[in-house]
Image (cartoon, rainbow, N blue to C red; front, side):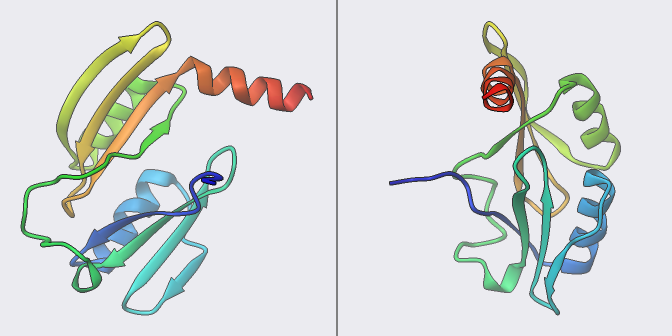
Length: 134
């Protein structure tokens, strides 16, 4: 049974630059590191884990176009996060798109070639509130 995300991993050829970029984006330092190979951050409502892995360890061709799955992270202010990602040099991958009532997404490619999905999702907030009330 799938129980929830344990870690989302992104890859970067320049691990130190990626560490600095994600520290700036997230507004917090990494909490775990494997020197020269891996950096990990914990953040969000459930202390989700984001790992940045050195590109040489990637199981795919790092020079290929972004592809595969997109992990979407809930944000309270989608427009502010879109502006923040753009200001940090991320490039729009998929523009802001309304998917349904209370559900809007966008995605960007970070400077290291990884796709970052962001969304406003009212359902996420409703589930979080119900969990807090229980």
